[in-house]
Length: 404
Image 1 (cartoon, rainbow, N blue to C red):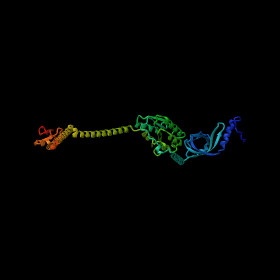
Image 2: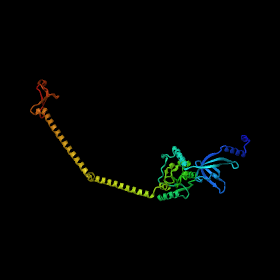
Image 3: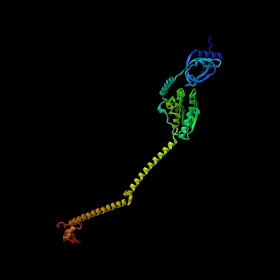
Image 4: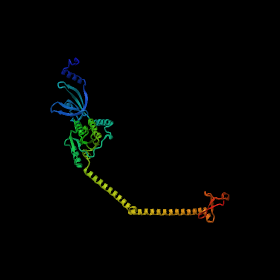
């Protein structure tokens, strides 16, 4: 076939040429092996062709598949919607409609062992990225204002969560979003519901609940996209998938794993009766503590009041008054002793002064002769003829004049 010239704005390709070119490129792929999940399966009675949709759970992409019914005959187990399969097919571009499909010739169901091995590899990869790290898990609020619930419509899981939560705390509010919990498209619906609840400011905790099931039934809850969506949530998430032995990957990513939906209903809200009982215990403990403290303080007051200082406070004043009187008496005695000693010293000094005084000599009959200027006459030669002299006696004095 002659290659058409390169398209230009002046010489564009017709639609038929574009379709033909696309068909050529797709046909070059040849036969391929494709893995996916059966999303839709349409078997018309008596029709030789079977139509189905093959979905990629991780990317939410799908392709139409056609095959002869003989390709599905003899499959064990029988092919059903939600099954994981490996398909041998050839891509086919239908130019009239501009659609791509696969013409399958062989189907191989993916066994449980292979599924579990793939889940283990995905689990290891997510753990390496830190999606399961304990330090990033958040504590659930003690009393959430509103609980978001993602579960199947009218399911036993929904009933178990609502019933047990309301039995524990009758005033709890729920926002329930019903989604498909198994089969093709389940993971995408759960992701959308989780993101909706996470964006609601009234929702304080999100519960994802489903009853038990086989490994294939629980595959949507090991979906990588769902695990990453839960990891990105700002609201704490509780995983309540299956029963105790069931461990989808969602259990490792969620902030709290509940063993069953019933367990989730008990763990998202406190038990009103239990909290009232705890309050009564705390109140009793507080009353006992206060009583002990008051009794101890009263005993201390009684002991303080019984002490002499408080029982008879005037005794302290009496004691201080007695001390003051004693100090005053000691001061009087000390002062009197000092005065008496001083008086004795003065008497002795006076006696010594008197004994040494010239008056004492005069009193014995002696006299002191003095010049007019007060000088004492010691020698006769010191007196001039006709000089006036003073003669001092013990009592009084005499004025005399020497002969001329």
